View 1 (spheres, each protein chain N blue to C red):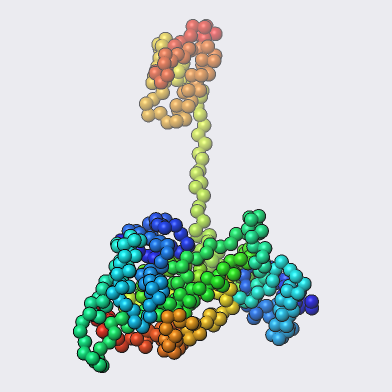
View 2 (cartoon, each protein chain N blue to C red):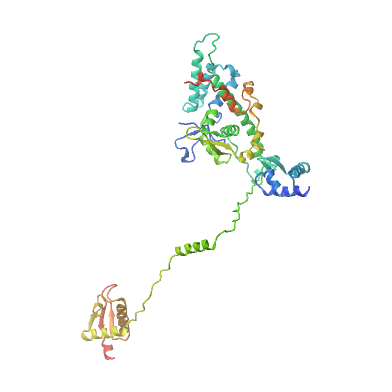
Length: 257
Length: 201
């Protein structure tokens, strides 16, 4: 688990990542402290100890206790600091000779970081004051819509313009035109065929008056012929159920007429 | 008020963002920089002396008409305008480091703060308070961040130089470090850099 030192806003204690951007990163807002340096600095201030002579054993112990209190045991940065403090504590315990010039205080690096952090905190205080002052003043809240900059006049030769027109025209889709060939229906011819069929037998079927490979105009002609003859009562059309064969029966009345 | 002051007032009223002095000068080509400054002063005096609900403030790299703080509560209660969210301490720390040491990479910020700053940097970028200003020379050419004009605006700063220099900061813990860290925060780091005893782990 990684502790990222809290969200941007002053947020509740634990902030669950709002989106998948943080993946497994679990952001914990410790609330009181902005990180291990902040905690350490607070301890030093509370204990009123001299930063140039930090009683490292005492501070280290307090740091670990605070970590435990705040349940920060899993927080990598706090753990790292705890390890660093323990290391310094160990180095301080090593015996050294009186007046050893080469000896360097193992706390020096930590002190440098603390001072740097402290300086930064001072700037934070200033930003906080200025930011708060600005927060309490409203500006006009209307934002102008960004207007596109005026277009420069076109600088084109006639040839370029024609090429552009040609390019546009070439991409225009040709409309799908069909040539319609008028085919005259031959209703009279069809009537003659039906009459001829019915002259031979009293009853016929659709297939008897229309060839199997008939063209659409022939089919239509036959249909119109049948309807016409039915209208003239020369025959009677029956279909027992939808899509079944059509029965064509010679009508006696028509024959008489 | 003279006519130039009135012209500037109209422009400042029309804008939601601070207007730099140079941009104000373009409003009237006949006006000298000195005349523009005098007119701005006149306008500021006008708001202050006659008593207005707004005032003229120089900040965020320019001039802006802002409401006076004493009316904030009432305006917010009536829900006519809302104050922006306050930034968290962690965000302010990150901003402070960037403001002083820009351009600066994420790793260096994390080192000073002692915690990772990835998520906070992302939010600051989204809020337009920082931006990527350069790429570092080091391994992987890390992104370097700097503050934006909006940062100045939201922290009522005229320009970055208005922030106190590091040697002007009162270092509560050890005053003599101020002498070592004369120019900027990083001077202290340089002073302590050849110090292998503690870092050799």
